[in-house]
Image (cartoon, rainbow, N blue to C red):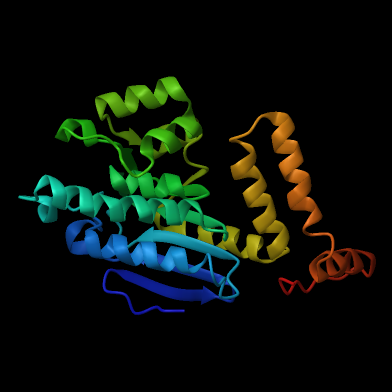
Length: 264
């Protein structure tokens, strides 16, 4: 797996757990075209090879910003065609994160504005530092969220509150985000990464095939009727039955020992 990126700091922090750090602190970790291409590349790679990973943590460099959104300095003076060509990369990046088969935890360590808020929302769930701030501010610039924000925020906190936040561009705190169901946990800055790693470690200790199938069943099922979702769940379930991990899990339980899952 490639780790030598220009705008990302990528490291295996424990067996099966990868940290992807947005690494442009001089620009509040705003994503330019290069960062978007690199995020697109690494997340699309997981569609073809899991690299024995079982959990991913996405965070930002420094203590002030997770990601300030798209780099508006790079966008200054773009023609309409250039803008749309760049945004096509942003769209593909967003779809790649959303489609990642491996669980993705956002550790939001500061401001997550506009596209930064959207990146966090594309992850499976969010832990935030107590100084984190969120906002979808695009309408204040004459544009609108275009990396999934109108869809992911609405699904997380409901249509009416999402409309209020997106149509006004009003920032909201980590505490508000937790109360509304957007953020799972709010922690002191110094404890944020350790908490994310602890949760990633717990996920990684479970059957990786089971985790991936459960993640897919939740994500896909929520887009279906209940009856169709139940049918999809059983299809996902049945794919686990012939696996070695399923046999190992039940055997370990009966032998009163920790299972040794191998992802097969």
